Length: 269
Image (cartoon, rainbow, N blue to C red):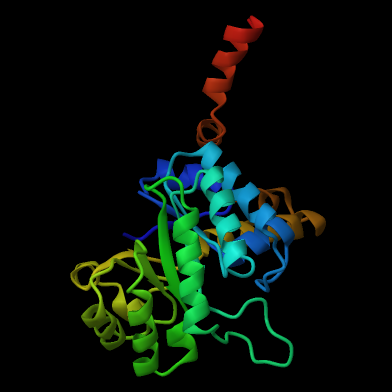
């Protein structure tokens, strides 16, 4: 399954309306959307959970949320699961990256296997709704040679998590090596163009394969170009961006439903 990358209530509704079965709310996109800041873990758990709740309230499309490192140690992970479960998400990921960046160290380092397993155990213990999916996320393929990455991920697979979320997989050989170690469902946090073979991915146990975050980039591009033209006082035709029909906007904002409520509750003519 290739999920839609969403970032707010309207983008989630669009994803559902055009036929996506699920959506992903990435940590980087959350930071861009809520703070206008880079993905350096300056976003707080409260801010992430609040935006996730807005998305879930506006659409019933299942939402998978990137919860980064759980915003601290294993105790913070418990709180993260509690807040995101309350927000209504369908699933979340907890990762092994050393976050935020440590003083005097290169970014994208990994915490120990022991600490990582403790975080996964805390996440599972905090879960109240058994339908909430908790995925063990790893950036081992970014930080380590393939053999070491596979060995580490195999240890994560000993936990009763609902799946593995792998970042940095670049080849079929890497994916096959993981598959030999575990039967857990796999999610790919980024799918190289050469690996966008849905049948082969499925055969190797991949249930979710992300395709990047083009919707957010497209939205920013449209706003930037429109405002740039308007500020430059371009010719009238140039000021009119390509847009969806008014009835699409009305549908996305549930205009008909709100009008019916106005009549029902406020006796509006």
